[in-house]
Length: 273
Image (cartoon, rainbow, N blue to C red; front, side):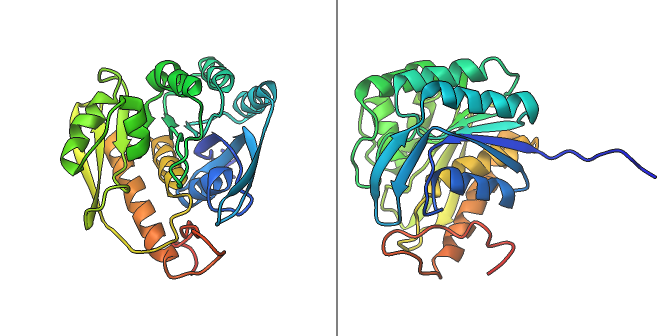
């Protein structure tokens, strides 16, 4: 009898909750599962939210967030970590310092700073802390166009500027960048991946779909990337598979109606319809 136990690939998300299930911690855990990882979570805020909008945010005390991270990593461990919105400079520094005590290379940061409405979610001081004190310590960041513009301090006018912008976001070639092009209006959706470890630019193409069901796409993409890195895939392959997963989840989710606003993608399109 073979008593050798198998081991899960493990992914930890550090983010806020979404009780409607389409974004945040809930989307991250669904994505981890769909992409073949055991998911764990550390909740930084309890959010009153649905497909229509956000009504309120209740931050979790910073020391309790740190406790959740340590509880997971000291016991279960993680092959990758995804970080979502961190609402204060104190929390950003606490997450950075806590993770620095563990040997985890695959840290993916979704630098959530702007709401779908265009309203800023972080004060300037927290944005500065995120850019200067956390971004340089992760393996990959996944900004959209508005977030990239904030980090760079300048506008991005069109698709042709994305490769140079991705390189400029890489902290001098230390951090890989998946720059999402969803806010542009080209018929084809072409995200740009800059692999800082091989210095190559890779366009990630997909068909742009006219659907309101895009709630949580940024959370889902960064979590899919973390899940594929947890499985040991090279950066470009992990980014490519993450993009393919999200594109398929959007396409499958477009056929459904749920809620009265921006519905979610279909995280489990590969398992049930």
